[in-house]
Image (cartoon, rainbow, N blue to C red; front, side):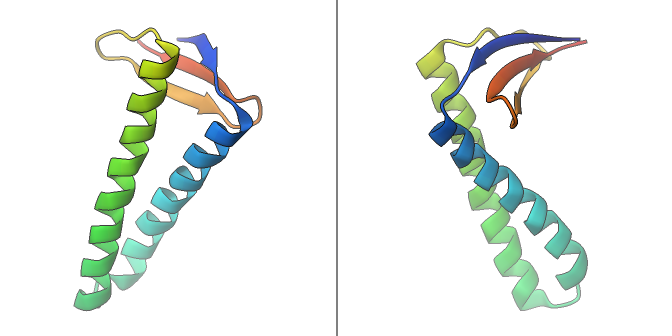
Amino acid sequence: MKKKIGVVTEEEKKEILALFERKNGLAELAKIVKDDDTMYEKMVRDMGATSTRFQQWWDTMAEKYQWESIEGGNWEIDFSTNEIYLRFA
């Protein structure tokens, strides 16, 4: 199930969209460069930094907008509407 709990600005959506796309791109790159130790190490560092920034965005927005949360739930964004949902079992 999911419940709409908020909405973010267009600029805020663009920030998380860029991080989301970067994380997905790095995950795909990991499949390609796994045999190149130097590239793989760079990709792993970048993935770590991107994941940290991704989580920081969610933490910052949750505090700013006081989003509802529940144990075992997670937030997601609808990139077409900027709406934030709480997904739970």
